[in-house]
Length: 220
Ligand code: CA
Image (cartoon, rainbow, N blue to C red):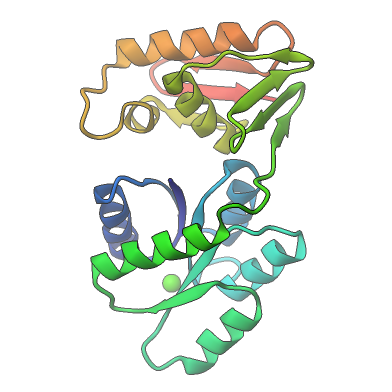
């Protein structure tokens, strides 16, 4: 399960991420609203945790933009204790639930699971990048008419790279997502999996570029 965390308070972002990962979820974080909108479009998240006060555009604008473009990603809003009007506004704009700060980690995890469960069964959109089309729900990836035979690690790598398309994904971050936290994340092994993925995407799919000393980038 993949969760996008949109929160500009560093300490809170850290504790949110720790709680979700501790529950076996994968997380992607941003402190910027504009980046959240971009990530949500390509990342195929099962849920989004949304703070209201952000440095660029606020959580209400993000909600409006997401629902306006037809996104059905479940959204859990984080609100202040006394901000009843914020909760009402958020729910009216299409948030699925809210959580009042401060909250206990088990409650956070339970609520994220609940909103994601409610959403499941609805159409999970396919992602298209150039000639590549991925349908996560169906477990199918195609380049043009060619069906790709991807192993689980290659799927995991592709998912992460797609969520960061055009940007460098640091090796350590990618390894953490591909191998999960309980396995030794060997960078050599990561290179093997990414190399296989790269070859399967060639010649007409998006390229996977190795940025020496940093990580990988999916080039549309
Ligand atoms: Ca904030």
